[in-house]
Image (cartoon, rainbow, N blue to C red):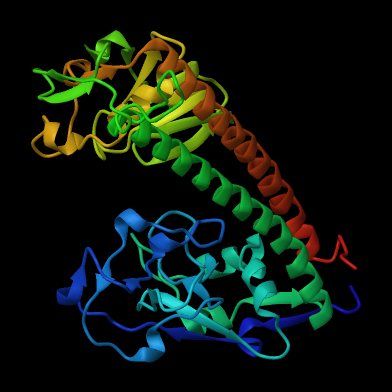
Length: 395
């Protein structure tokens, strides 16, 4: 520890307030979007929220347009544990530096990438939290951040630590990018085979484009390939209600809500392939799951009646606008009877099996990548405090 020295953060960095962007210029579309505390993970890291982006169409000082690699910090605790979370801006000319966000600039004694991980440590977070103002929503300020005390090593050691930790994060990011590509490939194949109906015919050629016979289906009011049918969703799935999870102990099984994974618990409600439908809240966030899981009481999960159909049915319902089927008044709501009544095209069995084989292989890779990401995250979180206090050295 001889090379480590105690500082106040004010001796090492500056924090710049963001600009007060005017609400009348917010838009659902545009080029530049407003950075918010919602763009931070509680543990640290940048969180993209494309469905919640607020774009800005008005004029603003150009110094508040972020650059790729900028280090930013959440100054407001929009969610528990978020205060003091840092993130690195992922791209140029895309994000605007909002007033609830601080922009960190480091002097020559502090490596910026090291500072990013420094703000993830329990010591820094606790000091920021203890000095925060506000009752319902906590806030911090540059001056309060400046008073935080830290022990840091020489600049080269800082760089070594940052390179090691960032290598773990980059592998996680690569896995996430691979998963996104695999999901996109699966959706493209579904559209090609079951929307355009250019699945491979008996000669291996695209069916509809090669003159395959189409027949009009009166209930769908459209043409479908000859020999294909239509069934209600109840033919494929049995809809079940989720259950309360508050009494469960923490563990390894994911709990799904309409926004995704909420926590992990020691018990599971269902094991295997399932399609999850929000019962209340964000109705369009339909999910495919193939693992042991729990789902909350504001969600439906499903038992799959036919082994080869889960992924096909998932993509068949994924693009439905369930908000148009909303039965609620205040809170958007869905019923199992509405879901059961949805029309699903039934392809020939051999085409369905081919699709399932290809796409399921993608999802198995996604599953393995997610498992590896969990392991890498646990390793990073375990090593972080020891690297930051000198117990573990990186040469």
